[in-house]
Length: 479
Image (cartoon, rainbow, N blue to C red; front, side):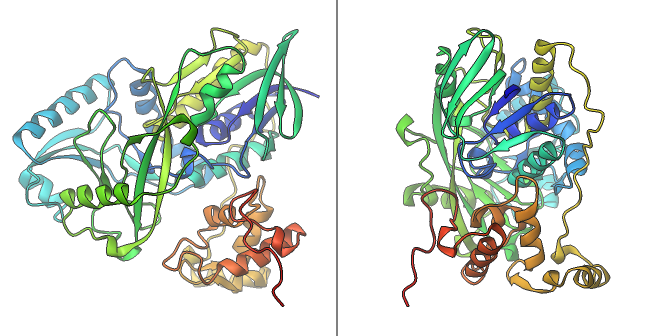
């Protein structure tokens, strides 16, 4: 079989692009090197929907950030993904920084960002009383928001699969040939033929690009480390709190999450190319997060930390998104170099890339059966007593709590495994249900999740992994 389109990379860009292409009568396949969607930068970022004032006017970042921010609420509503329009503040701690804030305001106006204002110290402290005493003003962007990036990606992939896209996990592209208008992708699951390729491979997008002879850009892996704090302090700030950005990024932020935690980070440190998949945290990096988060909010304490993590951003040496047909082959479409504000821009980028691809193919009909609405996922912790009783009456598995920290039931875990492009490992269940994301970080529920996965997938218990190949949890019986 020869596909019309193969998308390489099932991060937020790849998954949303697959969903956009499922609106058309195309044979589309979504390929992911890892064992699940959202396994790269998508699962480990700040989860911010930026307003769009930071990017330089005239850049692709500026264009797609503002449009993506505008599109995000409707996309999240259609896919039943939590989204909150909480607004953001870039806080100044000196007169010099107040001048920088004014520059960002002017840049935002040039980019077409709505609902911005400059706050004085009194106005700022009235909105966020837990900020440091030195905070003396801020840029307030009311259109900014927060979203769960991996939930968005999972939902988009599910919706794409429901609408006819094929999903192949553990499918790493190791080489590409092109002849007679057709690409042959050499993968770990065998050869795949396709007429068009969309390169959404994140930190590996330059490597994939070079497989067709396009060496026009290089990806510099950039490490960012974070702490997640307990929900007990999740209300310390209501808005996303930025410090003035530097050449390395938007700096250490303090922000609530859509799930009620508090997130602080990230650092920004360029890595060697051979370390691009290294997501270990470092003592030095986490110490920086702690130090600079306290600059914004002195009450922030890592005593409330329940976990820490590292994300690796795909920073391109051209310092902008790389979108559109490759100069080496017009049937190879780039969706590369997507760093911040990539998540914010994702709906707009996906729409654009799908449009470019459909136009290049030509005479593509609509998928008349397309349904962009993703069925709402039952969340026991959010349900009323009446809704819980009804769910349990229908399926007793909803009455068995597996994760006590987050109040996640066996029924929800089974749903996550059986869903389109469903969970195949412990972290896949975790991202879909939040089982294991509470204070104990899976210490109590982890073994039960392993048992449920083994039963539902028809596997031996020692075949179940934490996050795919090589991450086995159990090896053999001791007695």
